[in-house]
Length: 261
Image (cartoon, rainbow, N blue to C red; front, side):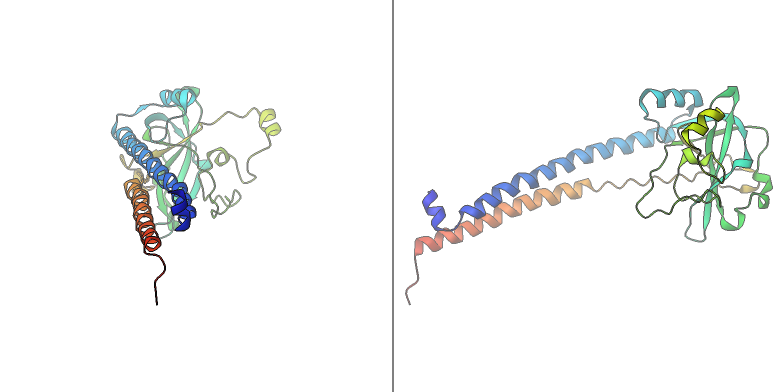
């Protein structure tokens, strides 16, 4: 049989098919597992969003335990420090805008945490244009925990001096126009540690005056893995069919021998 296949020129195509087939099936299996993982993740996020908020100390404790706090619904009581308000670029379909991040100093001496209080249009970026929203005194905030982002390939650098942020760098937001200090300066100044996450405030209750508008969290987790599963398995089946037709034609041509003119 080997000699027959060699005579038909099928050895190399057979080897290529045997090499590609496990790869295509493996990719299909991997996407199947990714599909199950994505479904579990979506279900977990939905459950967290609609759950009763946990306490701020509980969220901190869970972060220390396993770090799994993304989208956790949390409640914290404290006082806003509006003098350190930060603006994260968040353009909308109708106009340019910003998310307003303000440090909240919790009761009981717990680590301060940045709260994304909501979105404002560019015309209201200046806090003096929305004085009613600069809430004074103790407040209770509920929202979703968000972990820091990593800078994307095409994301601009954060502009500390202009207080214009383009990615959620919670560690750097606490500092002023000079940016983060060196580790030595940090230790000498004995600065208090901030929470390792931020909180996206819920849409309700609304801020006085209507600005900033809370509830900015966008959760868009596309689950196209079933499509990928069908694609990779389909390519595997197609490869088998194409090779079978090709091999049949070559073997048939070999059996018929050279055509007489």
